[in-house]
Image (cartoon, rainbow, N blue to C red):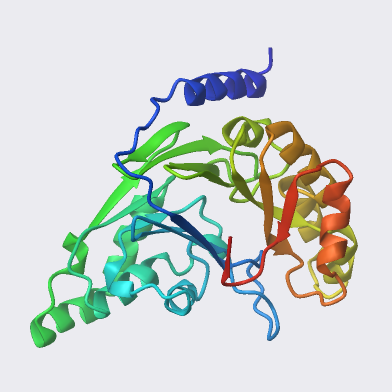
Length: 308
């Protein structure tokens, strides 16, 4: 048995053995797609960078922090000073570039309560480096404006294995490593809430591990790549050959996404982290076409600030 297969079976078994969660009440869970475009390129008419929001019992949970995430949260009606939980799937820049800035923006908006941040290595090092980078400004505002010390508000929870990440009275959050070479510490998250279960794929190619953690979920928010659009995108960049090899090895195309969603038995598939995210010739129908070949459930093509 291969090492990869053995790790998948162990991870799937560990996920299946996680304790169930019981809820005293059934608060409505809001899911908002803050940013639905994949990749670090910034274009005038492109989608916002990857980020998602869950609001459970009035508490915001932010999943990934692409550039502009704080602005998107405000547009979604979230008060930045009430920021509470942040989860990073991995450490590509389009997923973590505004991680520190989001917490800082919450602080200047009046944040005085703890923020818990979860993610794989090196999230602790990244957090410490951000505070060092902004030490002058933070300490100046503490002295000049009477603010509490931001650095004492943030609790960092770094993990490097599948399993339960956090649990409270409203939600159980589990993680499973998916396949996104060359980044080895890349995770999907499953949020089991009282009213529904929602999985966020992070960046991944076709992954049996993602199928395992998504089994029976109400919603799977998953990245998607369109091959025809990819070729048009590559024609515009100087590093086309290297970029093509990376994208094909580490991201999922629409046809394979349909297979994955069908095998997982998810009730609703939400396509996000779209690559390319700025090609106007790819209509919603075209995005859905490849997925529909293998998946018969409900399909939603995500848009920035769409609420599911």
